[in-house]
Length: 398
Image 1 (cartoon, rainbow, N blue to C red):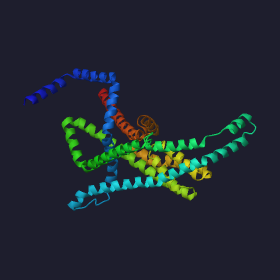
Image 2 (cartoon, one colour):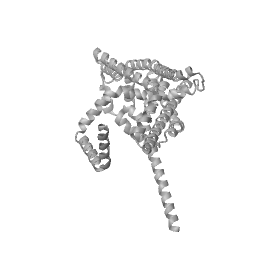
Image 3 (cartoon, rainbow, N blue to C red):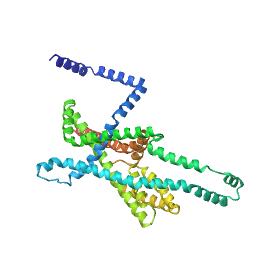
Image 4 (spheres, one colour):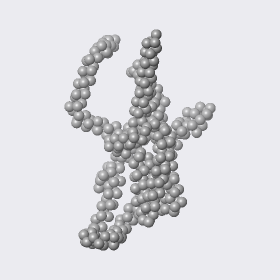
């Protein structure tokens, strides 16, 4: 009873003294500015500690999109209680199996081909270089300085090949993690452990979805007034709509682009069509720049397999991506996200600078959420001003 009275008095003290609260907030912000370096270190430490849980929550959100669609197909109107109770678990398992199949298919299709392409490139580079020298000498035969420079140009091919292999290995290993056996074991162990933690956390979130929703609703009712509850719920619903629409639209667009790339390469008898189609589809998941990355990688791979086809492939993929980007992408992604192209570009640029590829992917739906909420606020203010002006006119007429 005494503790309740203290809490009530404290709440009353803070409620009646808004200037005091503002002063405390200002003091807190001042401390954050003064000790911004420590604040950044603390945030980075918390991110490092909580990253498996954050990744697990992201996995659960993406998997929930798949689970929802499976629930609409698998026994949606069953009357059997045991089947209704186990339906969600079955859909979760099927979603995991589906995504695992896609990941395994990607690695089986792409990694061996990339290894073969790098090996072939390191073997064929000297011959390509000699051909380029001959072409340069013939083309610029009337320019003595160019002829002298090209004639005396010699490259240490064993060293270059070793650097290419080291770049590939270190790039796959995360910037030098594969430099020693000990670092390999520690890196793999740490990443596997973090992945398992994320996976287990995602499974728990998916299985406890209904319980977590009820608990969140109770917390919302306990901590906020009804008006603020409505605002928070609306913001979260808008964010969920933006994220889910963006993910679904981006995945469908990437699948169509990858499939059409594979089919077009098969029609024109281009080499390694399946691998290039898969790479093009996967890189297309990255907004805006993903198409350029896929085109560059595809051209490189086609060049290693058949140099004469590389230019034709580049023309084909640029034409295909231009058509899909102007006709398909706006309908699948633009309509679901509701964000103009200018803001998509700005979001990708800022998100990429902050968080790399993950930042690019997350920035678009986040910006779309802010854009939608701001547009609603502007429309509301315009309606209020129009109503106020109308009432003023009517009163003036009286």
